[in-house]
Length: 225
Image 1: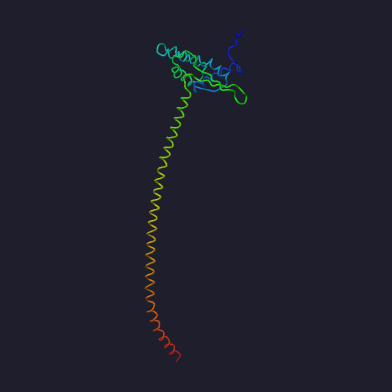
Image 2: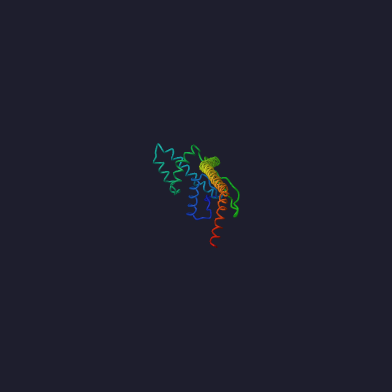
């Protein structure tokens, strides 16, 4: 006969085993789903389900006798040394369970672990649909990404305006260059006109020079005499 063989030692001492199961139950309450070995998952069910039953019972005593609900919270706090996990257990999970008589968790086997070959499993709360929650999170992430992309696009629009201003400046600079070219063309035309006047005046200057040359010769003759 199998007497006094209930429970698993998990190759740990009593204190270490208690701390391990307490931490596993806290992480399960916070995350609603955890992956661990099959032996730990099955052992965890023995500890987490009585806690959920206490949270469910505390809701019934909330209006009639709240001191009983406080007592149940204190009893759960002996095992769960985590304030946030206690609040979630009694306020959220207890209300989510509703009229379910038991079987608040399920264990899903996931095969052997690579390396040591240990059998792994997922333990989760039955009343929480993990797939729907994951889809909602993915939608939120995609919406956040879309909002970021739209904000980036709105930020890039002023840059386009800057480019437009740059093109306007370039156009203005082009007009200024055209004006400068026109001014230079006018200068060159003026210079050409001056050169043409000088060329027209050259024959007169040559005639005056020819008339003056004999005078200089007469002077030289006088000097010789």
